[in-house]
Image (cartoon, rainbow, N blue to C red):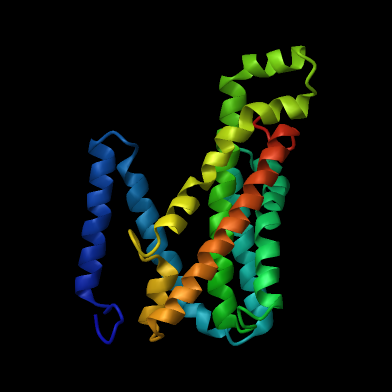
Length: 247
């Protein structure tokens, strides 16, 4: 590292390759899945970040381009989540769930001026919140749909007892879907004690002091919790209402 920045060069390329191959080998030989999926994800990350790095300077010079880039991130997040859940046909409803968490959080932090109206600040915050809401939506929906399948007998019993379809489905899938918030809760509880998350490290590497880095990270973590909580709640209700299904 030079002046706090990670040096780009042959050594970094070798280290990245070794880490990707190691991860793929563990997955493959540990029978955790397909090792090539790790290699594909790593390669895709390199290509995507390289492309973004080439165009980000131009994007950050324009408010309109910044808005378009955030919208593109959201669209990709919605498509990715719908595919991960296995409900590509319900893309609009998945997008609604993600947006329900993202929009209030970004609106609050931007309207109050906590996050300045500058592209260099908006893009990373928006990306972090969108990414968190996407992951939470995917996990919650998958858990909810799986529970409705594996516990279909209990669902039928609830209907027999007089429950309407939506409340009966909520009784079955809501508790397990709430587990999608565990990663965000654990990260928030242990920040500074177990991990130093990306926003904190990024601000430090950017030259700011520890206090500014800490303030930024707290805002990100609490914003993520709020966004993910709303997204999970909305997607569970959409699943229970049959708006998101694998049929």
